[in-house]
Length: 78
Image (cartoon, rainbow, N blue to C red; front, side, top):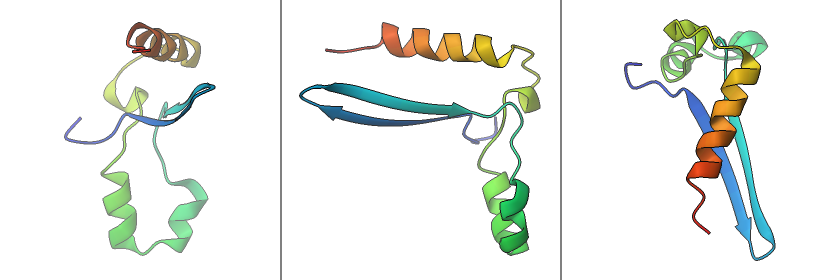
């Protein structure tokens, strides 16, 4: 992956519980935001993220989600 991020995870924990938000791109692209970035910034951002299909992984989005949930569940440290 050359140091690029594949999965982004955000978490919030309170006494009442925990919330996890995850994102994994199938194919990473800047989309419309690229038009407002200078070329150096666009290249830097693009070089920091990667999608699973960009790595040759052929799993479906549903399979990727199942694996992410299973990983988080298995590593829950209450």
